[in-house]
Amino acid sequence: MPDSTVIDYDGLIPNNVGLNEDLRVRKALETWHPGYIDWWKSMGPEGFQDFPVFLRTAIGVGSDGWAKYGFVKMPDYRWGILLAPAVEGRTIPFGAHKGEPAWQEVPGEYRAMLRRLLVIQGDTEPASVEQQRHLGSTAPSLYDMRNLFQVNVEEGRHLWAMVYLLQKYFGRDGREEADDLLRRRSGHQDTPRMLGAFNENTPDWLSFFMFTFFTDRDGKMQLGALAQSGFDPLSRTCRFMLTEEAHHMFVGESGITRVIQRTVEAMKAAGIDDPYEIERIRALGVIDLPTLQKKANLHFSLTLDLFGNEISTNAANAFNSGLKGRYREDKIEDDHQLTSSFYPVLRQRDGAIINEDVPELSALNMRLRDDYVVDANDGLTRWNRLLKTSGVNFQITLPHVAFNRRIGEFNAIHTDTQGNILTNEAWEATKETMLPSTADNEFIISLMQPVREPGQYAGWIAPPRYGIDNMPGDFEYVRMTS
Ligand code: BYC
Ligand code: FE
Ligand code: FE
Image (tube, rainbow, N blue to C red):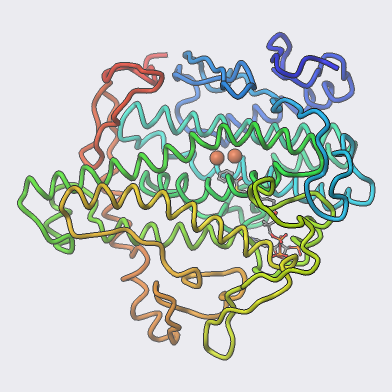
């Protein structure tokens, strides 16, 4: 057994899984590598492949989170296979096999289910890179541009993480899936990415911050559930991915905080108290808070669709078989088998939204979504604290879970952001008060003028409080002269 706390950086593919002794898998990954680089160059960050970027690379997998920072051109980034250290004597934490030793190989009877979970997880990672590929050219600062690229290379690494599991444990099928992961394209008519939200546009930086706040947070929840898996290599992979996810969440949360900060500063300087004086506020070159709220409504509702149907036999089977647990399963106190418990699910019945108790096993998507809403609300609290201390009378809120949904119980109805059911006519007449209108989007796009001077920031966003890796305010995070 190789020492899994040490990352081997000598070969083509950095790893702590002993690739040097695993020639079959090493060859499969090395064969896949050129296609990945082609994909990265053609579908990754557009226009910035040749510039050195100040990026973080993991050099350890311990809980002390060793990392080093340095300038690297993105195609030369060392994407690696990194698993969190094994936990000795780990057992399957939930489901029908609870208490049995965790699997080091794929249990034959669950092969298809596991493969599907890996493919869906893997598909989202390159999808997000594709969605964000045009954003570099409108970055509000070099600091933000660097953060975008850091998120992008890590999502690229997350693809490697799933491809490793597919190639190591699924033979020829796994290799085919790995190739298909490079073939699908976000938003493509014929070969789209698998899940809805990953085929949407991310046209501007407000969308990017909302995406990293709301949609990467689905990543956090799903990875949290998969980190509990009885299939130990998946658990260890996800545990390491979660350490990277924290940074993606930071980018989103702090990005929106800085937008709010800039807006309230500008309002104060101009003597505007009323956040609904939209035209006057926009004339200051900052994003008005009601538009921010509409963007939040959009990204929250798109992300809720990623939790699947509230009532799902797929989710029940994945839990029962020990493959996908609940968020923080190990912190929950119950029997971890859920064969006789119930869970309240919001349902749509004869024109009303009601709560109904259903067998808990079938409601695991709903439960994960509930945990997600709590987690997202925590983030909002911090934005709202800033609004409160600034004296502006406005709070960002999450819309009702039935609002603007395409998957699950509420896909056939329209509601307002409070969850009141609307007729089609009422929805058409009011939706632009709840979701960004064409004019809102055009205004945001009009602000997206690039700023490339070190230490300078676009007028609609405040500078960050701290530099990356404690760098000074005028640090050149992306070197524009290659
Ligand atoms: N779009 O039984 P159901 C991340 C399909 S984000 C399209 O409810 P299940 C990241 C479903 O596939 C985290 N189709 O499904 C973030 C099923 O189809 P089949 C990604 C959808 O399996 C930012 C059928 O409807 N990871 O990492 O219980 C940047 C019946 O549905 C959708 C995961 O999601 C949809 N939204 O739940 C970068 C974890 N929803 O099989 C990265 C792995 C449902 O009948 N995935 N369908 O043809 C899963 O655990 C589950 O597949 C889902 C769906 C939770 C997604
Ligand atoms: Fe990811
Ligand atoms: Fe992420």
